[in-house]
Length: 103
Image (cartoon, rainbow, N blue to C red):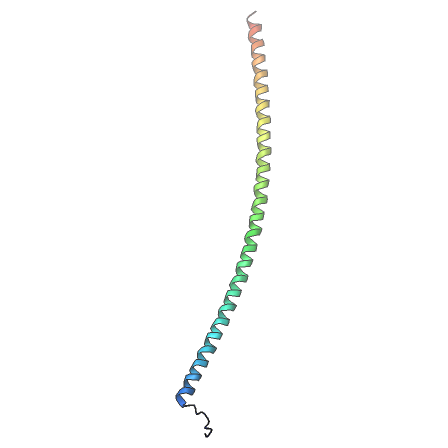
């Protein structure tokens, strides 16, 4: 048997080259997609961090508002008690005046 080198036809060479080009193009596209996804992930992480900070600030504001409302409510209750006491004093004075006129 004689050893003949395997000859590759021109069409096969073109097919191999086309497959290599396709594989390189796919590899480049996948790499580009990974970079884009990584950048998007970084942006989402930054936005999530900002949202957490905003939520934390909002919670602090809500707590502050609740304490202001509670203090205002206490003042309102104190004022209502004072008004009731003044009304009772006025009623007492009016009764004394009316009682003094009736004599």
